[in-house]
Structures are given as C-alpha cells and as structure tokens.
Image: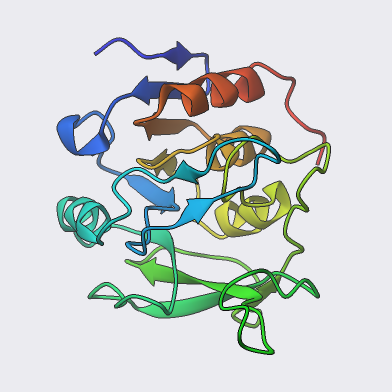
Amino acid sequence: MTPYYQDDAVAIYHCDCRELDVWDIAGGVMVTDPPYGMSYVSNHAKGGPSIPIAADDSTDARDQVLAVWGDRPALVFGTWRVSRPAGVRQLLVWDKGESPGMGDLSMPWGNAHEEIYVFGTGFAGKRRPNVLRRATIAPGAANRPDHPTPKPIELMHDLIGYCPPLAEVVDPFMGSGTTLRAAKDLGRKAIGIEIDERYCEIAAKRMSQEVLAL
C-alpha cells in the first residue's frame, strides 16, 4: 500500500489498521491511543458538529490490535470506564493537572487523569513514579491539533524517551499524529495509521515541519 505521507523518518497510512499488516513489524514498540470503547462524542469544535471517534462503540479494535502485537513492548492509553486489556505489566497514570475536565457533571469531581498500560519488556531510563504530570491542551490553544482527544507533545516525548532504544515507533491509531511527531523530534523512525483522512492530512502537515530542538 502506498503511504499517504512519507519522509526519511515517518510513514503514514490512511486505512483501518486491522486491514493492513505493514505496522506489524519485528523490533518495534507500539505507542498508541486507541478507541476506548465508550462511544465518546466530542464537541471540541466550537460551533461545529459533534465528532464521534471511529470504532469507539467497543474495545474490539484495541483488543484485536493487541492480540496481533503479542508480547512485544507497547504503551497503550485507556480509561477506568471500561475493562483493562489482558497482560498489563505496569499501569501509568497521566495526571492532566488542575482542570477537572467534563465527565459526569452531576458529580463534584471531574476526571483529571487517564491510564496508560505497559506491555512487554525493554523499557529503560531513570526510575521515576508512575504518575506523569503534564497539563492537557486547553480548547482553543494555538498548539492544539484539530482532534477531539489530543495528547500533549511533552507527554509523548516522556513516554517515547523510555521506550526500548532504537525501536521503531508504531501507532496504529494515529489521530492527529502526536506520537509520530514526538518520535521524529527524538530521532526515531515511526509508522502511523489512521482511518480518518482529515487526521492523516493534519498529521502529514505536522510531520513536514522542522524537528523541534529539545
């Protein structure tokens, strides 16, 4: 299959990852934010239509990809609202900071964290707590990609920095390309796959920018 976008570091494919095996590479590390299986609908585009997330009606997409990936290293975002996948070796927590978020507005507490599941071996780096504190990207912020659930680039730098050295980064649920952008910033090769073409286009534009000075 011809990549939607490709350069010396990154390749992007526009399709359903479950229908393409190019991402199923030996020696890679999967870093991805799959559909959580909670039928999430975002109103992040002010004044625009609600935006559903593809394949978010169940955890099938997440579980199918994990089954193919097997025991290789992976970092996979998730939520307490649905069952955790099998085989998790370590749980990381993304602390989003002071914003209470949305969630159930009848409750006095908002959800200010997400889970990150660690699979496989080979992760390395200075030992630290399993809570990663990085502020979420505020709606309307200049650095916020046009996506309902964007992850801050600093968080992805943190995560990829602990991935097995030299491993190619694979994101089968690429979204707006933050994982690939972070991998490229850190000098890693990466493959991303996204079912929605509008996000492929956003990601391609982000990849064409100069590498950030870290």
